[in-house]
Amino acid sequence: MEEKVPSFFRFEDLRVYSKSVEYSKWVLSTLHTANTEGEKTLCRSFFNSSMDIAINIVEGSSRGKSQFEHYLKISKTALRECVIYSSVACGMGLLTEEECERSREYLMELTRMIGALIVSLQKGSRRTRETEFGSTVQDDLDDLGTIDTDFDTDGGVEV
Image (cartoon, rainbow, N blue to C red; front, side, top):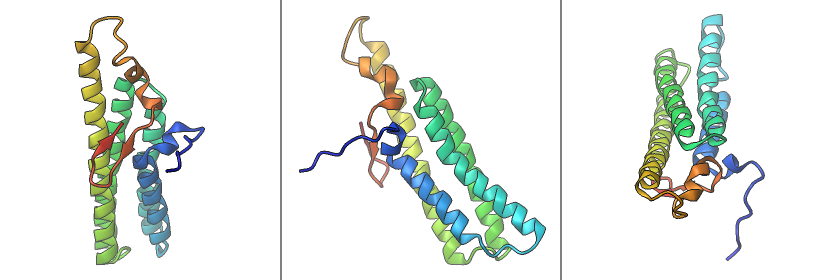
């Protein structure tokens, strides 16, 4: 079995990051039919919110656990904005019913993945508090934003 070499930018090893970038690319490629200024504004806002999901994952991953959790919650806010933009774009005919459903599938999967990472961070914090000072059991959790964290597509977490 071949060992995976970690990326120089550790956040690139997070599946949730890759999935959020994939979603942003999907949004950009799917919303190419905007004609009016209002439609273009909606599409721009939709794309910006989709990018904010990934941007906040990246920013948080370089911080401590509590800050990472905070940035993940900001990612979830951007994700909810995408739900609204998706619904409006579908209602305006900028997305087909199939595309609207695909957007929802992406967003539900990202919600599960981000939620699982938040829970993982919270559990790590609780375990760290429960250990005695000087314990090495959870020392690596102090820098959780830079360790390899991996996600299954069903929202399961591997750390």
